[in-house]
Image (tube, rainbow, N blue to C red):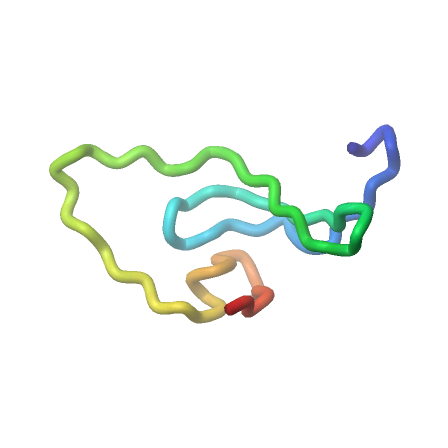
Amino acid sequence: MSKARHELAWGIGRHGPGNDTFFMVRDPDGNLAEISCDLEKCPENREAGRWCHEPRTLNLWGSAIMRS
């Protein structure tokens, strides 16, 4: 993507749920496409957590795009 000179539309950031890093680019129609990696692996017996839909959970490293 760098060689093709695709610009980042958002990121790089880190999601709260999943603890994954991500960035966003726009597809040819202008839609945001999210690329993420390093999704957290949890043991089967881990208690379920609760994450509120707020900027802090959507991007632990800064502001977030609040999508519905």
